[in-house]
Amino acid sequence: VVDGDVVYCTPGGTKNNVVALNRHTGALIWSSPGKGGKSAHCTPLLIDLPKRKLLVTHTARNIIGLDAGTGKMLWSYIQTNLYSIHANTPIYQDGAVYCFSGYGRGGVKLQLSDDGSSVTKKWSNQTMNSRIGGSILVDCNIYGSGDTNREWQCIDWKTGNVDFTTKEIGNGVVISAE
Image (cartoon, rainbow, N blue to C red):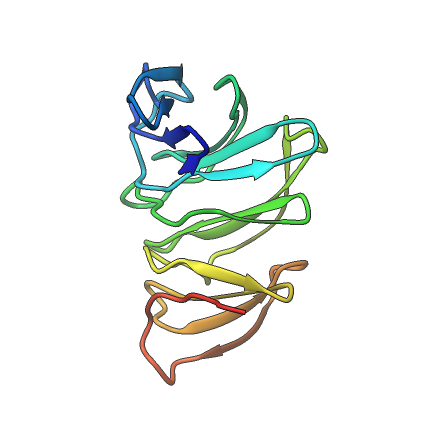
């Protein structure tokens, strides 16, 4: 993800698990060992909180939150699946992140502390198990399609309950514009 002159990415590995680079020169700004896991193909999410910018990304076994200015890992949450691939960018709203993946795993909503230094699990749901198609949040509802269940779903952002499903069309990618 690009923010001004900085590019954030998650190459994985034990030393340079998550890095911030100068987008013009490629020079290393900071490097974080994270939890030392493999990359999970997730585009990180940058959240501008009142006290800091927070970078949230998936690695093969964990969802991690880092201080975007320093690379310091603030928290981690174990989230695995069969193939260690979590290719969907997390969703953020109202101080919480929803992180999800396919291969039967589904997602979890994590409430951030005010300064982003810790998380608390709010709910999890295994039915929205999108492998790579992403999901959108519109009017407190998460919309997306599943991987193993091959249906479109609407999940309530506050509760994690599935409000409706349909198999009228095949699974796929979803976007929202106004």
